[in-house]
Image (tube, rainbow, N blue to C red; front, side, top):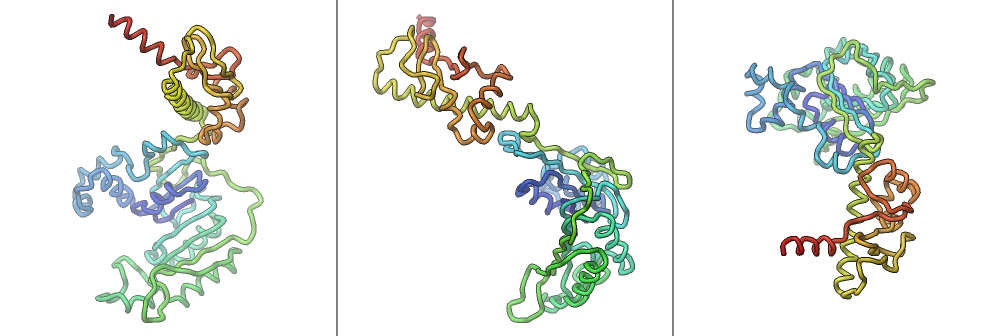
Length: 355
């Protein structure tokens, strides 16, 4: 997803939480300070945006501050996504043709087009639809017919707006795009007037490309030639072997410890007379946790029964192979059970040492 005119990155911040398989989120804005101010607003929430704009020292240290809004959370490391996610922010103009912007599945232009000079709209259209050639484009812009509903408004909604289209003007432009570049369009919007038929407060056009590209572009690893990269972060994912094994070990040990504690509570309740120098009646074939010597064995099949472990390994054999590839989890000689220390034995040893 490429958000053109990303400004304060609010859309990207939302999409990174509800990404549903998105692997690359990119934002570009010609106003570099808008992106930078967003960083500092999150880091220094007690400062107003006006203070940030007027303080050159604060703006000079912005790039060294963490992008709190787009950076991974602790939960992203504890529960990594199934697929990788990269977030990139660029300084650049939508009027320029940047190879990194080609081949995106979705390009969004939220409240952007009205900031362009009317003479630049055609060039904007050519760059987005003719050069980037995304599968889908979402463009929103103010609906001029709705303006009389807004109390106290005279003229345009923002001093930087160069124009504001009526529904008919927006539709005419959008249908021209479809005819010229091979897209279809549907219209919707947000914000409805209760008593007047003036359309939505903000009108939205959703474009879909009519035909697929012969050779899809992989822009994940392209180096920008025109835009300037301001920020990049790569989220942890299970596609990374190190992340996968760390996550798997964590889930396996959690499941095994939970099973062992449950078994221990049942043992204590029944006051089992099993001795510590022989193996119990359980086995590694999934018949339950059992004691063997000075350790407790948790069958791998029981551990794999955990939904979180099953989500990481398709079967017990895959789980066994993944654990044997590392040294964080001890398996028995048959590879059928996880070996955990016997808490009763540890407690007895501690008592003897104290005596």
